[in-house]
Length: 194
Picture 1: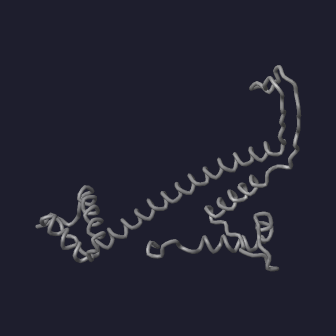
Picture 2 (picture 1 turned 180 degrees about the vertical axis):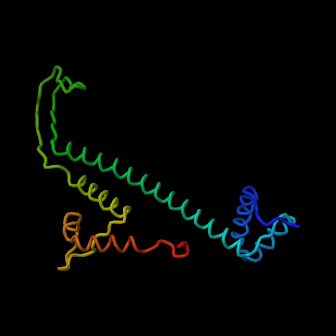
Picture 3 (picture 1 turned 90 degrees about the horizontal axis):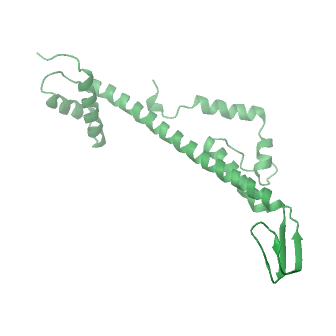
């Protein structure tokens, strides 16, 4: 007479086998039959038990995938943080302007001190900063918002294009709350609902 329940080790072995058979597109009844052949009468598996095991496996796979996705998003956000910080630093440097000195004979050492020679021309160009750094900062902000699932409207109501400055201001508190409510109420995978 066979016993009714699997022990923990047998359950793990069966779930590994079920995974393999699922990936080969076998039906639940085929999987149950194959497991019953393999366990040599120690216990019997019904296709309903296989269904239950498959649901457990899918839930585990879904959680693993979610964890990987979240880790990937965090890693990408950290990269954007680094790029943005470097762009802010470059922006600040670009606002300081450029100093140039042309000398005849002699040289300027690493500390910026002139040694020997005569200064022929000295010039200082002031700058309001290079806009390309602000554009990169804006791209980082938009990309981070996309990764976090923050949705900006595509166009202004008057038909003009949006940029990062006016996209946030156009979203009213009520609209933001409605979007959050939609996201919270919509299940990711309906097949995994209890």
